[in-house]
Image 1 (cartoon, one colour):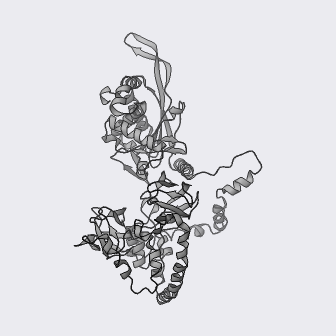
Image 2 (cartoon, one colour):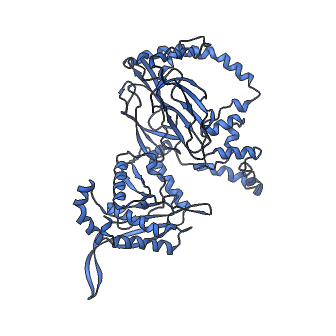
Image 3 (cartoon, rainbow, N blue to C red):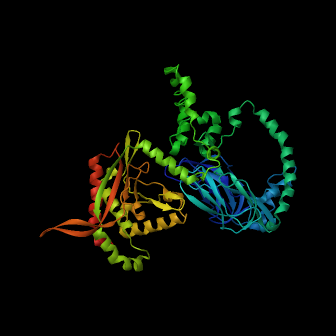
Length: 569
């Protein structure tokens, strides 16, 4: 029986999707729930599993085609056996005069043992919706090394997280196309694997290269002829890159640009309203509706017109102070007793983020004293019970996070961000918890902390901290914080002045808890006692948070901690 595959509806407001990649081709078998294709919308990219098991009969839409929801995009024969599908693959291209090259391209079916051996492209993975590139930190396998399926092959760093990437196939590493330290665009081929029965004799693969080269040479005149035929439509023939000039273009945007003959240079002039300046479908459609007039290009001419004399001299001065390269710095310090260490990707991002925060937010600091004696008494009292019941050690940290979540509910303005002159108050509490790792600071996010009880907060915080130190965090784990807590007291520091984690408007720093002599008020009068005292610093953005709000919020956190309810445990 033949079954139609429809363009799925990936969201309530989604009416169409763009096919990024077909993972299966006509004649290939597919299992139920195996990835069939990748689809992009203006909101998300998704890998779509097959709803049936069978053999691909026909693809009714090609890669980069934009298709309406519920339209038929492929046909699957659910009754055909995998073995019967083999003869159909060559019949798809009867016009080809050289049938030799297609078998060389068979690597798209790595699991086919009959093929003997296949060369498979290994691409830079997409580790999150806003991630467009990754930096190769370390290759765990070198050319000639055998690799098992799901065995770590490479470690990749992005501006959000470091990830160890497993190999999707078993085989032998044939070639590395990018080196350690290289930053590579998502979807680019970074390595090639020899898979299948012939993986051991990887050198035999290059024999197919001359055939492929001759096939390319034979097809070159045809391509030239078609190019000259389309010379009247240069914009349509020019392909739009995934990323140009610092902007990322989704497959849907690129598809619209091709259909409307928008050149790459023209597309680059369209201001993006999406995340990190990303050009969305609405941006392109708005550009077309406005008569293809982009608002931004008009701005630059105003600079020379206001100051004709000084503009020519000041304009070249801007690019005159780029940061020195590692080679320049090394040369400057050559022969001296120093180590010149280039920043890794995460350290660069931390540095840029900290500088941006100090430039963006006018920081104000408030410091409060907190008596942790009661809370620490509860920790000591319930530590063994907590360990037996929940399998983890009870510490003061989840108590602080829980107190912060409750205080944010009392003072919701502290749970905001600023865009221009507009305040965005969040109705969900996502607490970023700074974790020190061997490679620097990382801030996983305790999401929806306001909806959890204390046990939920403690479990989630424990899990995030462990995975942060083991480099097992997903990109989603380090996104979306609305408020941040950092505990520098674990290193013995008593007071600190943390930098706000943008786009938050406040961050709480917790210092070391020390036993101190303090005056205690009793009914019989003042007495001197020994208490466990710690200092907490609230750094807040004075554009939104005034002293009264900052101080009241900080004191509310102190109140919850000093009067921590034992029933919460």
